Image (cartoon, rainbow, N blue to C red; front, side):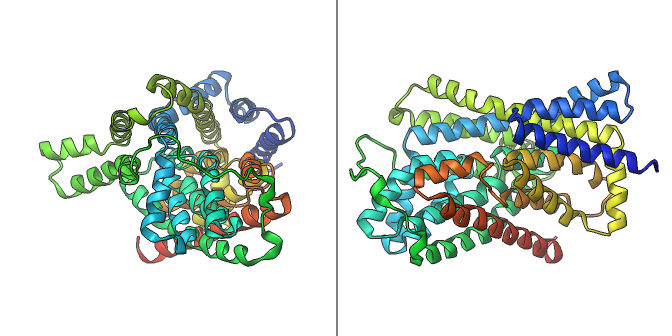
Length: 442
């Protein structure tokens, strides 16, 4: 067997075992990533002590890069949802855009809210509002569901601080400001395509949702909630701090005191911490639970995701340290396929195979990170291509598929059209946007 073939066989077997463990055996990705990483290192001929060091170093480096921000982002989303801020943002857009353009307002809501809030969490929160809006405005519910889902899916998979994009940013060592700016731009076209699909589905008889399965009670706002403008400000504050800090440090002298302060304020962890503190202060009177309870609950939600992201970094460290990544680079070079396309295709395939957008983004970014050192391609564009691939092909092996189906009332065939088909189309549209940006603007 040629010396270059054996590492590639190990890599393919590792991916196969990874998918088998997650899909067939239904073992948590955290345990599968660590276990497969260990056996991959041993099968590659690495000393036992080297395997354990690579494993811990990869986990630690990933956590040091993005662990704090992942936790703070999830906590912020928890606070916004509990205070009713997410619903108020939707009402703000509906009021200003008008019920005549409800689909546009809901698409914008999904785009904005799902920057820090998980798509499935936002979907559950918004469904009573969407049903009420559909009933009072005589708007097909499937149109509202599609607009919200596609708008939210775009930012959830592409824009920090959700875990997938954060893992990509950390593993590829991307600069937060430019990555965030380009991510916000790239997420716009798929959201627009989702809005077009919403209008089309709203007119198709076979896509209509049977609303009789829901309780006919009206959606009533029975408690005090923050204003829409305040809610939107709290949601966007960390992003604005990151962008403002990044821009100011570009224009100010590097060694000036002001540059240091703006760099501090614009740091991703500091910006998220400030955003969380402001949210806790200004939204406190609207909480249904104590702040400590919300933090504890959000911390529990964040814990497993952080472990999965860290395990992905550990797996990638093994792939790199064993020399497998070098052989993959040589193979891809012989195919003459740009790394940009490889990043998108590999992520889309892994997303379809195991279901989780986050796991796909974490795994592929870990694998491709060492290849960037030998590539002339723009790291930010590679990162965005990975994020775009994680949008694609949400099959029934994705837990989000069943959350959306259950709470929206879409049947499985309907959801295969709305979510699986449209997630693939919007992911491709997002990737083509990256290709155009890479060709003409960077």
